[in-house]
Length: 186
Image (cartoon, rainbow, N blue to C red; front, side, top):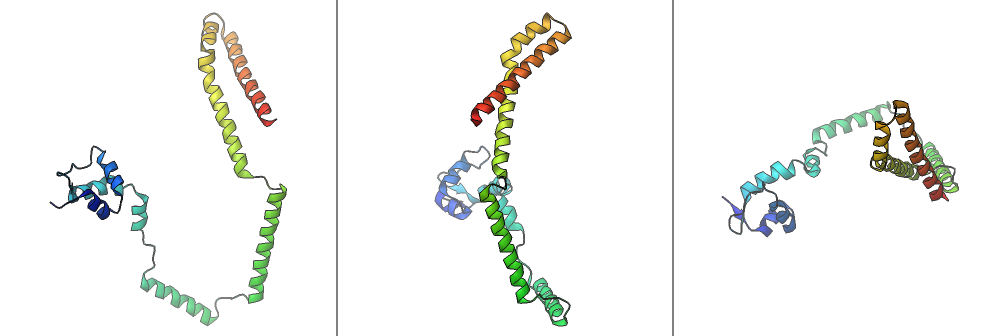
């Protein structure tokens, strides 16, 4: 059994000592041997509970590099196409014209944004989210606020009267929301 001190194990694991202390708070973390950490048990625990959910580990497993053989094959194919005349290479002037057109469109878009012609979609999405949150909160609050009133109405009235009372409560809530939104816009 190999053991290391906390600072040595932190260095071994590539984390800080504080992270090791945080790991030790979990019930499943292997107990220390005196002042030392059992490296095999801690590494097994880390593989099971930490590395299995860490996206950095998953991304590191992916091959981000091209193998030399496939790179050579692709380079040869490109070279053969260029050399054989199978690929049309646009002239430099045409490439510059495309670039200038792109930059002109970009400047036009920036001008449209600054002049207010283009709506700021993020602000709109945020505002709709806020309004939805207000509406949801208000509708959830209807039951505790008006529950006793509805209970009294339900026990002493017909279905039509109960539905009318419920509609009245909902209309009141919607009216309050519209008044609140008008006052917040002013």
